[in-house]
Image (cartoon, rainbow, N blue to C red; front, side, top):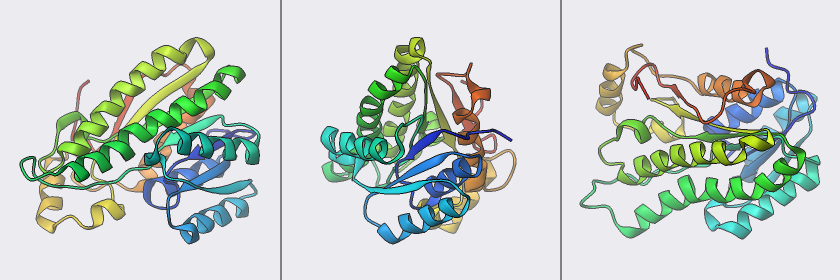
Length: 251
């Protein structure tokens, strides 16, 4: 068990899937949570209600992290106003727009890069100043096994998730002297809304490549996020943790 009592977390894309699970797991260990969402207010409210039922404070913050610097700064300001601090940032918001490389158009490329890579950059930039002032902080980026090994039909997604690993390592080096850590989680095949639409044959193929031989759950990923957010991970930074059943091994 990790004690996050007195900590405040901001989770982007926190209304569903991995973000929802992470928000609830952080609250379950004592953190207050700001749940960022883009469009589904009802889903965000449900997560916030679950958090308050655990005895923690919760706030929902509408905002599109893909919209750039000002939008991300507004999300951070709202979280600070509501909770007083941001001790933990989880850059989770993400989308897919799959297509083969030769068929992928500019809109499909830009949408994924803006959401999955540029959004985390602007969120990290916005939160770094209050964390530096506090001389403490935990930044957790949601990468993917696709960013480490590539995946046919996902040039945009794999590129963004690979870029996020580079952003993680650079952030870790730049902010370490101020007591701020930055780590990434790289899930493999996890049961979420994003993977529910995969053809059965594709799912079976990925499971076949996974040494543990089964699909992971959102709780598997949330447990890793709780660890990175905790004091027990105070000497861990710039790392990529694969929660992927072993589909990717090595650096």
